[in-house]
Amino acid sequence: MFLDLAIAFVTAQHGLPAYGWLFTLLFLCGIGLPVAQDALLIAAAQQTLAHELDPVLLVVVAALGLVAGDALTFWTGRYYGARWVRRPWAARLVPPEKLPAMEDMAQRHAVPASFVTRFLIGQRSTLFFIAGTLRMPWRGFFIGDGIGAVVHVVLLLGAVRWLDWRWPEWQDAFSRADDRLTLALIVLLLVLWLRGRRRV
Image 1 (tube, one colour):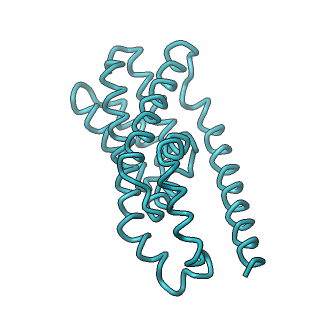
Image 2: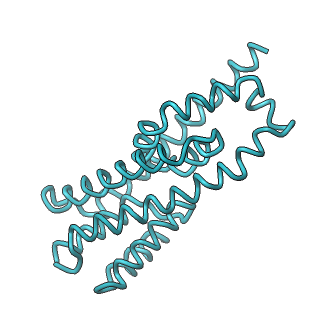
């Protein structure tokens, strides 16, 4: 429902307002709006076929919107998550003695981790919050996520213009991918938690 409304709204816009609303919706998606970024990008890319949007400007505006939403989630992790994870009640989930090693890993792999996270449907906000919580450096986050966002938009734009993708055809596929990745993330976190308990 939200996706249909968002796409109908964006595709009804023309000129600069269309770019402004696309940026705003992608930003809101990054901080929790229940709209699939990928389907929204495919719908926007379809507008380039009708010459309603310019492909190059679409890539720039969409990538900035994606990174802006991710950055707010990342900042929330750095500001709040990094404090919460050091409180006594969080010790069962993240043992204090293991936190420095986890933060060191986040610093060393900031660019590739941020790049890969951009392509994980439905898990981006959670993982960017965790990255911020582990005090991943801003520079690595922006480089990895920025490159990933440009590649992400270009790939979907190319799929629409050269492979004739249409968003209604891919809506269910993105939803299934979201569900499977969510389940995989839950299983991974559960396994890590159980391994941590066994070592205590």
